[in-house]
Length: 229
Image (cartoon, rainbow, N blue to C red; front, side, top):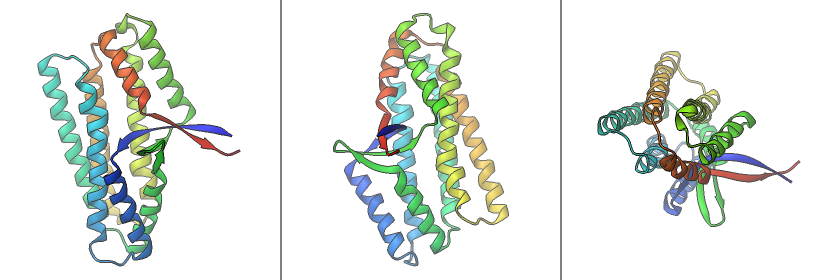
């Protein structure tokens, strides 16, 4: 039995239970009133937990100039608001059968391992390889100026992969009115640009000691799930 690398973040048992219960309700009674709003609330809660894990928890250990930190904070807050807006716009236009497809897709990214609960998506071989390369380089090379660009490239690629799994793939499952889709696509592109901006800003100048802490944090977000041949 092989394993598939995933990257994600740990969530509380309470949040896992709430989302799992909502998924079951959607699957069993998709016509129930207010499910679209509750689905949007659940996805928004997962989004905010992900932002907390991958940004605010990380920057606590990465020393930056106060102005840079403030600019990055402003950028990520703007990104989060934009993503929230897209979530609301999409969820409010879902038909009952589309809600079921959405719930099924979301359920595939929720899992439990060793008593912990996660939301995660699979990494392709190239993305996984780049992350492992960055982690090893950080731990072996004190000249961070020589490979800051590798960190930025790997994290931007990871962000794009997250957008692929959390937006593009699920929206292919449902029928969306053209003007809604165009508006949401524009919002997502804006979010992606904002994420790239923050990544470049935060990792433009780095120190190995802080990056080692970051690499450990990043490695802890990698989860390996068994895959049957």
